[in-house]
Amino acid sequence: MTIPGLAELTDGEENISPTLFLLSGPPGIGKRDYCREFLEEGFNSRKKCVFLSSKVTDRERIELFSLNEKKINSLFVNPTLLYDTPNEKSLDETLKQIIFYLSGIQKDESPDQESRRSIEVEDNSVYFVMDSLNHFCDIFEVSLIRKFLAKLILQLKKRRTMGIFTIDSPISEEYHPIVSFCDGIMEMKFEESNDLLIRKIRMLSVAGHAMTKPTWIQFRIDKNGRFNFADDLLKCTLDGRVIQHPPVYYLDLPFHSEGCTKTYRKFMSVFKELDPKYEILNYNFCFIDIVGLSNPDLAVHRQKEKIVKLNEFISSCNSFRKISDHSKIILPSGDGMAIGYENNPELPYKLSVELHSFLRKYNKRMETDNQIKVRIGLSSGPVFTVYDISNKLNVWGPGIIMARRVMDLGDSWHILITENFAMQLKPLYEEYRNNIRFIGSYEIKHGEKINVYSAYSDDYGNPELPEKFKQIYTSP
Image 1 (cartoon, one colour):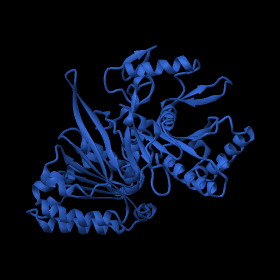
Image 2: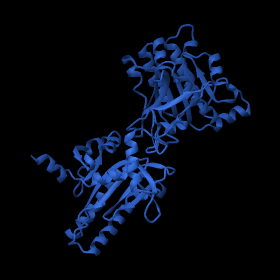
Image 3: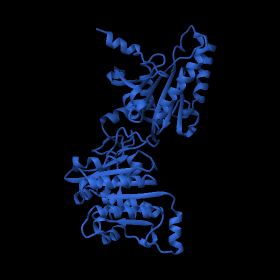
Image 4: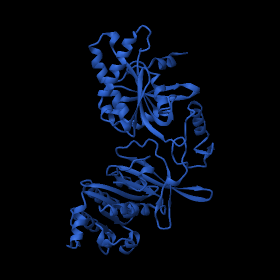
């Protein structure tokens, strides 16, 4: 199941789990047009579609969708039209109609074979729109709408429902109790630019996805009411995101800012074969380093044994072996390796926890010199595809560099995390919120300061402050 512009709103996702979205925006921005495009996706996929509106009449609905109702499996209800005076009975009747429809039987369904087949094709998926919550509250009491929504949501969540509930912004405080049920939030807004009104949309949150930096995406509505998203808009050469302001150019390539061009030039100077035609990827990295491996007192064969053993343990971790090769990057680093994952920020964290568990059990039965102790850095960010000195295609970029730099700040058993990555993890689970702790800022190369977090519990990580941070706090 999908919604209009999903790939642009989520940086590439093609499908998401069934979600009930709240879509807010000022009047006239296009919320209803967005919902129409969403429902038409359901029509075309032969899914059950429910359109609940307190504004649209039957005639307006026919004009809105321009579809032959006999050939689609849908339900339209306007509670204000059911009785002479809208009241609680109108809402009860609306709920009955929705429940009856979702049961797979339509009151006015013709018994012909084509109609039966249209229902049989359907699984348990539902496309649902309620337009608009604030207008419903203007007609009915807020308490009645809240009661109605509680019963409605229960029915929708029994099915695989992708739903959109619209509301005008700014959202009045009295409406807050009726929007808390949504597990995803989208926002629309107008912006002025050169005396023109620009429409923008963003996905602020969605259950099961870490939306750490929701991006405003520009969209247009054509004369037929169709949405055009940012596919045809200018994107930054460095990170691939849509440029929302006047671009900065370098070698005729567009960038967000001068800072982006400086970063790009640095990589150009290091990797002569960097080619703009290659894709810029975003990965989540776990940089693992064996502590003390370069100690000259450690025999070479012992060093090799530790590297081999570490590789075996990493390969045994579920968060490594269950992920297909095309969804991860593996970069040996001499004393360890960097492992990058697409999309899921949890995997580097889970890998760190699993690896600590394996190593601590292993070390208990080994002599001190043969024990393997690691330090780990976690970060996320863009990487470039480049040709290395052997003319092999490889990757390098800020995502790997920051994981390496934060790892360098740690000691044995530390799992250190950059701030941007920590902010992706902490909202996901209470365990992450409790076990990922801010430990301070540290100045790295070129005078740049980074905020660092440490992950630890009774089972993994190191609760002690890294030595480099102790030196900061104890220095005069």
